[in-house]
Amino acid sequence: MIRAYSWPTPNGHKVHIMLHECELAHEVIPVDITSGDQFAPEFLAISPNNRIPAIVDTDGPNGEEISIFETGAILYYLARKTGQFLPDEESDPAGHYATMEWLMWQMGGVGPMMGQSSHFRRYAPEKIPYAIGRYEREVERLFRVSDTRLGQNRYLAGDDYTIADIATYPWMRFWKGYGLDIDEYPNTRRWLQDVRARPAVEAGEATLIDYRKSEMPKGKAWDTLFGEEQFRPHRSGN
Ligand SMILES: N[C@@H](CCC(=O)N[C@@H](CS)C(=O)NCC(=O)O)C(=O)O
Image 1: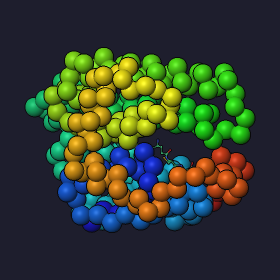
Image 2: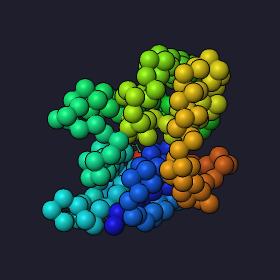
Image 3: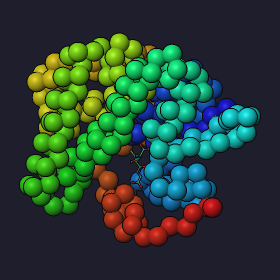
Image 4: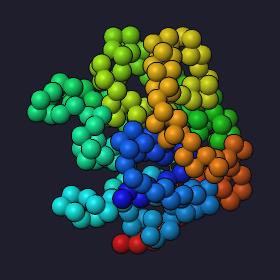
């Protein structure tokens, strides 16, 4: 059994989608990041960076329990555990490393840059033109990269849907929030439609939906995510 400690955000949805794609028995435990659940010592013991999601697999390697944080590591672990959505390194090294390239592209570029773009466009208390422009341009650049790639291949790593697509889709689907016109990226638009049509994607994105908040975080919630509460030292459960 896998326990996923999560919240309905793009990073949370990567793991919810993967659990559905792999048809793994799992339980999702909400970690309300607007109320500070991510700083609870028990959560920090499995996710010391105070970020969701994290998983615990009670039936890990050698039958022992294992916990994993960081979505790239979680997707890689679940792909290796199930033998799905990551081409085998021995029999298909080109496919394997292409998947890892695009997974790392998401982890190092798409997630952080789209996250910062949303922050400065939506959440920052002051609207700083340089910061907004810097991240908008970086996001446009990333959409151009995906559009070129997806004009040559059906999916990011090649012909097959992989953990690179699972990692990237929940961020790129929010193109409106980055101020983009998706019609300028027709290959990415086609890919978004293909990925969205998968039942596991629909099920993954519906996970914890009742907890989703559309309003802007204010007061304690803003402080928890972006203010004093976020940056004061927190005691780990380790
Ligand atoms: N690189 C991390 C990023 C995870 C992340 O940023 N999670 C956000 C929600 S999408 C979070 O937990 N925020 C809580 C906080 O900032 O305290 C991963 O891929 O797992």
